Length: 186
Length: 184
Image (cartoon, rainbow over all chains, first blue to last red; front, side, top):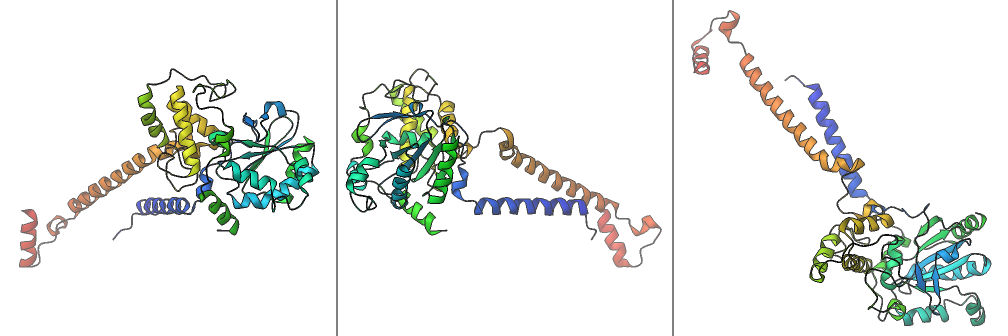
């Protein structure tokens, strides 16, 4: 039988392309379906009230580097990173640290912010003095606007209001130091 | 899968207890639907159109929700998922619909935060066009290939020379009979 090379090559090429497409699709990480479109843009505006009743907005923070951390008390990794964030807030007083509480119970937040073991690194007095504001996010609207997929997620915003870095998942000290240095310099 | 991602996944799967911080400090539910507490539009800088009839809001929100990907699920829409994030997302869709925003405006609002990946059905622009025209082109090519192969086969059948065509007389009765049947 005479082999029809053009047809054979087109057929094999098509089959290989299909297999490659399926292999890529099936091995894709679901979390990569949603891309980071916030980094490099102006931080989405919000106007939220903290646990003490003060209103905070992105606009009024312009000119100051800002660190925003979305968290919940029911999230284990958030608890892991919280002591490090409290230390960082103390070490960098020129950076405005803001916690945005996602979908949480008021009583649980109260417990986590004010009682051991989360404040074990400092006395109660110190804790109260350096604890950064934690804002309520009604219906998770601000989290949705920031493209948050799950907590914890953190955003570094420079003095011009530009998001320079987004961390999905818990933040480690090295990344925190590096990105805080960036937003403090700019 | 790393321990870290397991931890993150586990944290996402949990459901918080009530009452929520949001409900404790949220603006009253009687606030005008088209604007946030600050008086700004729900989608900043974008005024909504006229609000739809209230009885159509739920159905419209579900139709839009079916087109938006649940961020914590595998190929599930926010309209079908029970995750916290999906519930918040569909609640926002409902609120935007009630305020008078169009389907495109609402989808654009989500795309602005999450990128095109939030859409279960990608918009037919740019490279996404491959998804829409690719199958048609593939089917057309396959059909063309089948047709050309069939035509080629028939042509080859017709092209087979008979012994008599090349000056050879049938050698035996069997071959004579075969030729007679072929000619019928």
